[in-house]
Image (cartoon, rainbow, N blue to C red; front, side):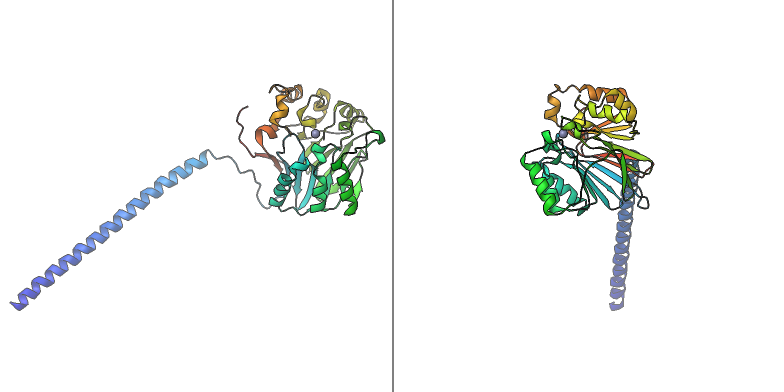
Length: 324
Ligand SMILES: [Zn+2]
């Protein structure tokens, strides 16, 4: 009896044991099926995501790349250029834009500039230059010598000169046509070709080339300066044009556009400025469109970045356009 009882109890234990085993096995099977189905679902949507994904704006790490950042600082110019650890700044924007420009540069780990260009003495181009000079190491500083009768007397201009003097920065004046190198970048100066009565026309016009790709920077140069550049017969053909004077109709003549024949154009402007044209595009933009140029604008695209390995150009914009 005792044995029998024992048998029974041992049998029921074994049954319970098998029962437990089946439950665990079923659980494993369930968990496996659950996760594998999840995985297949995930992998298929993962593939779908990549079907529509755009190509990364970055080039592979083994290639040297020049990047040109046209900062969104309203109707002002501030352009940062980087190539293989060499840094250039073309204009700085207004005094009030210093924080924006400074934090952008810090984000990109900039501590020193191999070249700074102040295209012309208007505050929307050099208003915060004194702060830039105080806060960064500068190798060379290029700015136009202004005709005596229009020498600026406003505060931010004086502060800029004072800062340059205090830091003993090497200041150069443009002497077109001249070219020089900043690392792997080739700089060519095209203007100003004489002393103009209009400050905008005294803007430094220059190109920066990296291998086979070139970008032309025009400051706020107007049609008189454009005309003189062409009269000199300079080769101003470029892949990208930084449109002069925030897209104003004072610049970007048809003849000038023919000479540059860009694929891309970029202009720094603001909603308020475009309102002046009743949100209709100024004729200068229409001229760019008629040439089939791809136009980027800081008022619509935010900060615009061009990257090139010298063969191909990729464009990255901060914002998606609300309208176009
Ligand atoms: Zn301007």
